[in-house]
Image 1 (cartoon, rainbow, N blue to C red):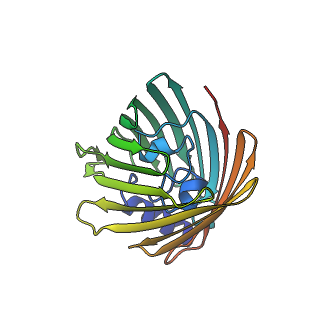
Image 2: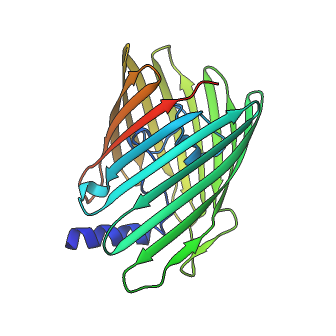
Length: 259
């Protein structure tokens, strides 16, 4: 119980929206980098990215049975317009958190612009329920061998429980090194904190198998994972380290919708 309470305090101390829990196993393996693989949960971190499909994920935060985390995402695309929606839920007897996300993006050739909103609701034992509506804006440029994206989370400093939620800048650039491999570099900057540098890569090892690995500096964390391709369906398993707590295991199932 002490470990569960410590983990909850850690989550609360990061002000809920600080991206401490990644939206999928793909992001978990790649330390939050999104451009290496195209899947629906990318729209959580960058609302200018839209990959038509369905995706569902589950994890136990820091491998604690009492902290299950579930999420589901759907992306749709029609002509130049993309719509994304997602829900996530963190469940514990002491603390529950739900998030509902909605975003739109518009494509101008290689350029994509996106805007989104996130409804956060928390329930803490012996405290009043809290809610907030932080927004997100995003810009992406995507080519066959090069892509880059930058996003601003919570630009208007939305509050939760009378505290400002983090205002975060995410930037990432991805290069196709070869037909089988990709390399991505990015950073995450939260107001009043140092830059967090991220490096990630993927290698298409066999016909139906891709390996992922990443490193994040400040905090120092390592992620790794594997993707199993089954026609339009993918299964991703990932694991990531933490400085003080146990490994977190993550699994995602996604299904691509072709227009």
